[in-house]
Image 1 (cartoon, rainbow, N blue to C red):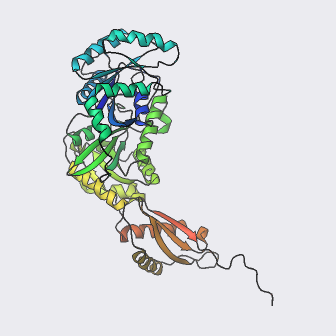
Image 2 (image 1 turned 135 degrees about the vertical axis):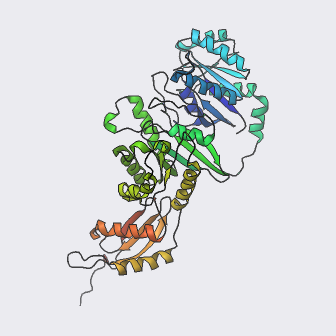
Image 3 (image 1 turned 180 degrees about the horizontal axis):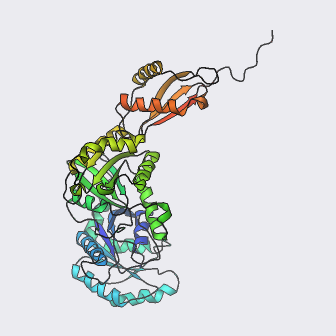
Length: 453
């Protein structure tokens, strides 16, 4: 990736739709409601033979610096400062507005190469607005339709013209083999549990929008992090409330984006407010992570507000009590506000990732299996003994095992839980989901006719 482009403009001109088109998938939330995007989102874009980074940003609008809208504008300004070039997007169907003129002047002051993008130019309705765009003083407009994919050949040419050195280098650079992939981490939790504040503290900068208002984060925002030489891709996500309380369409989209972040994560950090820990919704989220098969780390945030001196000693037993399905999961007391416990948190993430990827040799597994069955044989069902033959690990991420046996459907759930718990202890698999499947051995004589004497 040789250069970065920031997509800016007033609200609801199609910036996120253009971003999604460039990155090739629906990463940013899109809705008719203005102001959906709040943080700046970084994605890897591809257009023809060009590969580059692209920032999606909040809509530029007049506001006071301390308001939520003002903090959104600050995020946009930070994206402009980090970018090599700017896409200034306007709505060709509406034409040039006073807000477009004001923000075009703001962009000109940045002194960055700027490409004027007249979006929504499909059909006759967009032609007149695209012609008006010349009045912004940002050069020739490029007429596109991000929704339908029109005009991207012209956009490619405009990028080449605006950044000749960078685009030439991007085309000539041969593809290099992938280095060690970063650990993908999703930070999840209820609204206002401090997820964005924690990630900002890890990054050492105000990268994500924060504030006292609950529900500021809407998109799942991915940021790169290097912590003591190890690379991570950390996803900040929208807070998850109980389903019965979710009414607005936009919040449903935000929660769906969070669920997607969980499914594609390697490790999920469930952040709880230490003053209201282990609420019903926290347990629901932890159960969801376990069902998705992700490694889990519990972060007890706002620890600096905890006045109970003996609380730290209770964390382990309390966590195992409420979350027996991931017994031994790492629990870290921390404060995103002060930075307390961040090293322990990241070590917990790395440890959980290694356990999640762990493999056990078949020979060691079956020696343990024989001992476990001898110590506690499976019960007889309908007067007949169940025969468990052998087992093997089929995959990691999460650790998954198959037991070959007779009458798999007759093995009680309690016995399966016994084997799972013993596996966790014997092979040091704390805190990760364990998948244990029973499979019947095929009868070699099945289907053969008996010989008549």
